[in-house]
Each structure stands twice: as structure tokens, then as C-alpha cells.
Image (cartoon, rainbow, N blue to C red; front, side, top):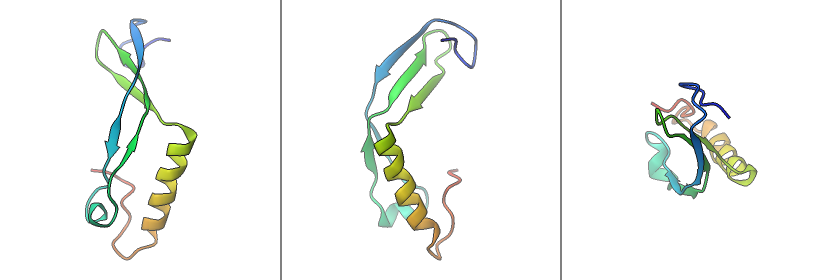
Length: 79
């Protein structure tokens, strides 16, 4: 598969461990959580894409959906 940034075919796939943290005041109420995305890394330009499992994506959606209904605000647009 070609890199979406530079078009190179020099990519590799790797496993990873990432601790997701929520932005703003949400981080006080919700601890971060670990996900284990698969990474596609371009070995020429460094562009990296991550893919979450369906289970991890469902968990992220559930946490964010619950937080959107609070008076603190909408934190879906991470800064």
C-alpha cells in the first residue's frame, strides 16, 4: 500500500501501545485508557496511520458520548 503523504511503497506495519487522554477538564473525571492500535509507518517520510480494534473504538465512542451530555462542554475537537 502506498503512503498517503509521500506515495512511497516503503511502509511497515507494527503493533503499538497508546494511552489515550481526554482533553480539558474531562481528563479530571475520566482517566486515560490503553489501546493497542496497529500502525502503518512510512519508512521514507515517517507518516503514520493508526487503526483501533472495533472493541477499542466502541469504548472510545461510549466514553465520549457520555461526556457530550455534561454541562462542561463538547470535547470531541481535541486541540
